[in-house]
Length: 418
Ligand SMILES: Cc1ncc(COP(=O)(O)O)c(C=O)c1O
Image 1 (cartoon, helix red, strand yellow):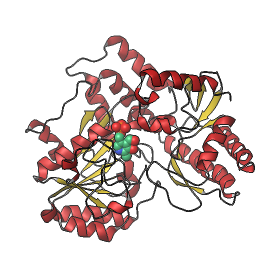
Image 2 (cartoon, protein in one colour):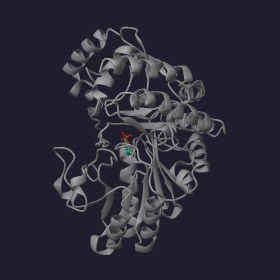
Image 3 (cartoon, helix red, strand yellow):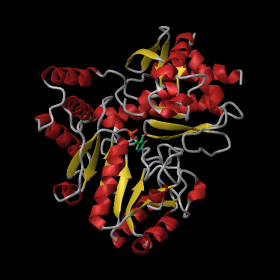
Image 4 (cartoon, protein in one colour):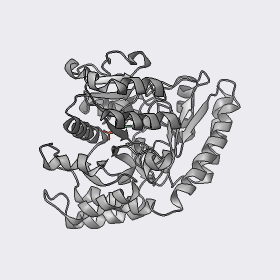
């Protein structure tokens, strides 16, 4: 793996593009971001023509791998007829119906473009319904980069005024955030119990902490959130932007048997195209006809809708999730086994097709790893395996058992030199 063309491309890109890559976190790739010429299935090729097994999967959307032919042909067909129309079209409701059919609490839906936008819409709906202002989130959870929720990113923020996650955030909105601790049901019950005094409109939770460890929620935790929200008139929102349609077709509600009032979906829903959605109770969502503003030029555009409809159709095949589970569990066993054979190797936590490298010390920060990951990341890149700087691993239906076996063998080679 020469990586030379990517190094030169990154140098050139930084002259025109702020940070040299389209999203800030991508710059964390070592020794520099990979520049891709093309991608198919579970593989991609860089500018030098070198081939990689891809475990980044575009940071989540590609649950069917790159360029699934069923998604591509649906998109190509509609793109010939229309691109964006600024009025209604049939795919807008056909795609909505396909999503609602999969989600247990799917009564109604709103389209947005990104996860960040859809989280903002969900919070607005909750504030409008309750007449309250604040949001309980959980330390280290990521819900997009907008000012209201990019705060309280460390365990030190628990039950304290939330610290901003970025320079340049408005300090006035930080007071809207209350920070709990994931899987601490007693603390959540106390904080939600003070909803009236705290002016709490919503509880916003990523049910598996997709960006901070990938954790299984205890049955008590989600059930406590549901019961406390009901008792104190607070809207329960699941942020399933990463987990949705990846851990189960019906998302966290199907997997864990706890139903939120609203869920936010994005990424995997559109099989590689840009679209997100707020899904849930009709009375909450129908507030958009009663004064809650929800807008967006590209919401529900035909190309994205064709991608959503086609992706949801593929995911409705009863064979999809068992086969994804088989590949993901093989990854955990084989690649995790190679890690476990090294004294400082660490391990993987896993929920469905999402895994997270956990250093031997046992703790994972938001967007961070530690342990041997930096060595593994660069060593594996040079062997032809692309991983994320954060240690998160995305599997897809396009990954074959041979990809997993090759990854395990390469990791053994890398760790032998570590
Ligand atoms: C759990 C979660 N919520 C929200 C978002 C924001 O989504 P987007 O990057 O599409 O704005 C992300 C992005 O990674 C996410 O992981």
